[in-house]
Length: 220
Image (cartoon, rainbow, N blue to C red; front, side, top):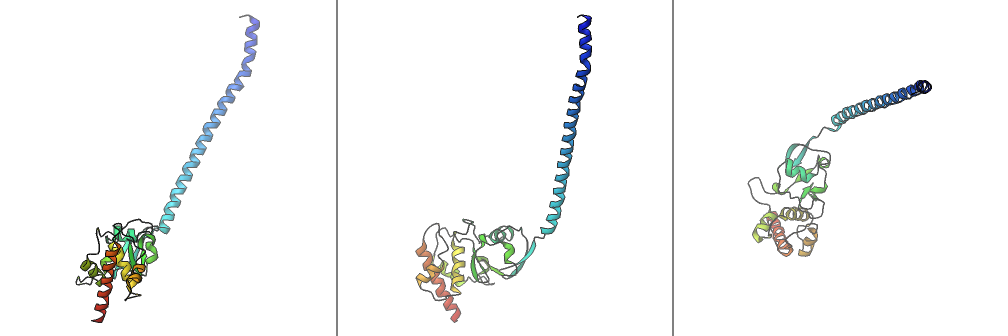
């Protein structure tokens, strides 16, 4: 390489050095920015966790008292929890069946203040201060079956019997308003309940027998 070429190469070096420094500074800037973003993300997450803990402290009072089958029951209930879920999985009252879980089949029917409700569509928190009656609470303390329960036994008004607790609870609720129904009226009264075996005639005969038992028991 000639002396002139070497001189030109040396003269080019100062121009390259600022470029190298510029790239280095740029990389440092990117790294610094990344650290800042990461730190900000950490702080945000930490803030969210703390906020969540504070929020949980505010809404975390989940232990409530329910009046179920004449007893005061303390139970830990989530805000979004349905009464059917609480009855079955928190209180062990598995007579309340979960079929469709969308207020269509009626197998989860219970009485709330003597009115039939689909417990799968009622939030547990909404029944505080009200009286809940399930199939387990129909029989007397000495074990004597409710007249409608006895009517179902007498007529063998079921096949698989999965739907029967719901039918019985609906019938009991209806018979409180109309104790002497015609067969057609009672059919309408329990029309919100479905039987997967589709033996409706047999079920209705059993429920009519239960209505008759109720009238007899009230007379004497």
